[in-house]
Length: 611
Ligand code: G6P
Image 1: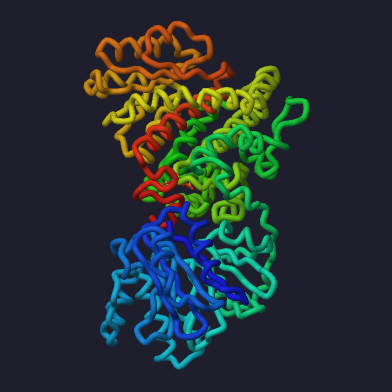
Image 2: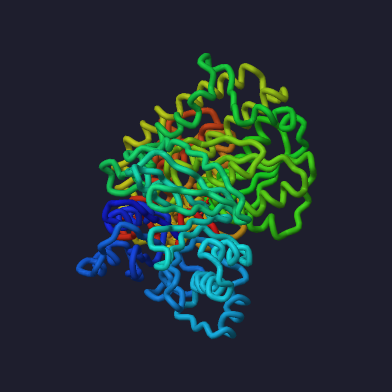
């Protein structure tokens, strides 16, 4: 997803912009550009990586102390040099970088063409910068007024930074729907689409709210609404360290994040599980507890990996709290005219807290009067602000595009919620509650044990790295894990993979099985163990290759399967948290061996802020 970085101060701006763009690479992008401002704008942009832009800009004039940079993830118009940002208006009065989508851009473009504007790119951003210029020239108003007026005519979402050579010491930043954060340094300001480019410079930040416009001059910032009402900026302190966004000695962010899971899961339950391990308290849900206990139905919404966590949430809530749950893809839910009742509880799950479809589904649920909760990783992102209550996952920044530690953190929160609700509504005895909590706190150590088998997982990966298709099978709690395992593989290695409920295999996928088809079966011990053993036999009878995730000490499956990946024994609620780890590592190694860009897979974005 697109990334923004801006700077105004006394230091050379170019290195700040390029480093900032590198920090934003994790979001996924296809082209990048910078504008050095302060006099006549110098704009350099390139399709491809930030390093290619840097190579191109070296040797050119990059002198200056004000500027903006952008990584673009194409929505309107293919990835190329021309469509890359920044965009300059026709008469050179304005330069703009923009995240989000201007929905009524086609109508505005036609209008401007009629007025003599000629467009170089296919982007909605070039339409917006020319609209601002048109308002400025035609309305004979100040630059600030032109920006605010033009933005009031725009339908859609934006996080943007705009500058003008007519007002050389100023940057204007505005937000509607697409996040922006401003870092306050010593006589200098940083602007970014998230805090990662800022954290190495300052910890003092201001998060812009929707319809906020910030006018930033050297050493001075004023904040207004789009209707020009003055606002008092609320300065917050970032709790993100530079170590949090570095690879920390690992080859890839994804590997680092997989190995961080013992700590990140601990961070998720830290302070929420009582010292005696006899209770779970989720402070963010405290004031809505009566509603949660009275609810007739929960609806969980999310996209991608967060949806998989949601599916697991359904199984956990139904099993431990005995309440009906529906799980919905946010994008389907919002367009289906769904039945939502005022006593429904909606749980929106999102790592980034910015996914456009999830946000839109939240709005729909709010309109219907339902209570909306968020399970989010990014503090201060849009979803926690839009919801009535919620729980942060506290997994720390996730940079790899393929989600790993955020998934296990989401599942940890859902497990805690299911157990807590089950105990509070009487479905779960105190004895079983405590047993589960005691198991939960042991999960980090058990994951450490799984991580020690990394070399074995790499060896298995080496054998099957050239396979064209994979099938992932699981039953009960392990079905969502099978889906997540398959998604990880296709996301980063580009191998076709499908997750299936193991018993459904007979109704279709079994036709695919032959001696070239690895079938990953999640078979750690639970009540469906005998049945999954039968499924393994069905695969073997058709000469399929079985890679099984089993409980430590399982000798039955070891004899049948081609390879086993062991996980420690635990209670059923915690088993998915363990079983997913070998699958993450299997995908990781396969992708590395195939030479794929693990942290930034092609066509994918970390945070999808467009519909
Ligand atoms: C993108 C990412 C996925 C993520 C999904 C939902 O597709 O590549 O990893 O699961 O968005 O994102 P969210 O931030 O809402 O969890």
